[in-house]
Length: 176
Image 1 (cartoon, rainbow, N blue to C red):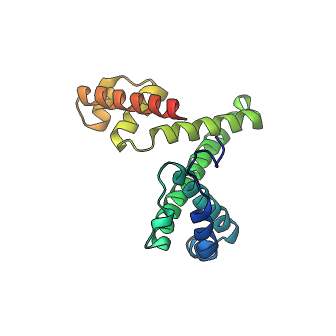
Image 2 (cartoon, rainbow, N blue to C red):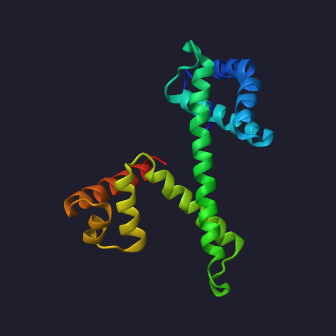
């Protein structure tokens, strides 16, 4: 869907925020990340996220503390970036430990990384135990009883966690 979708959508408040605070945000991110290129990328991602959110819930024109608002979004963007990189590194490490016979092509590797990132996004927002129970069940094929022992919860809790995670994934898939 184009960014201009919607009869009452205006880029002006975001453009004003961008003009007034972009340099400051890049500087703020650079002080935390230590890399000007990564800071510039994440600042752009912050404004893109704000622009996309503004389509459904306009708030930019009414902000009293725009820098505080931008920092909140930028922190979330940083966390997402760190999670993506950690996920990619874990996958690459696991692949490096595999015998050469299991090596996959760069295209397959990219597809697996994208799939893992999508799965991570689907499970984002679930509690730690629900996420863990779902992954143990779906990726490792572990029985509910064993999951319950590992998480130190009842089997009925594991059943509820997995049902909740499955529902969460289905809703995410339908919305995206």
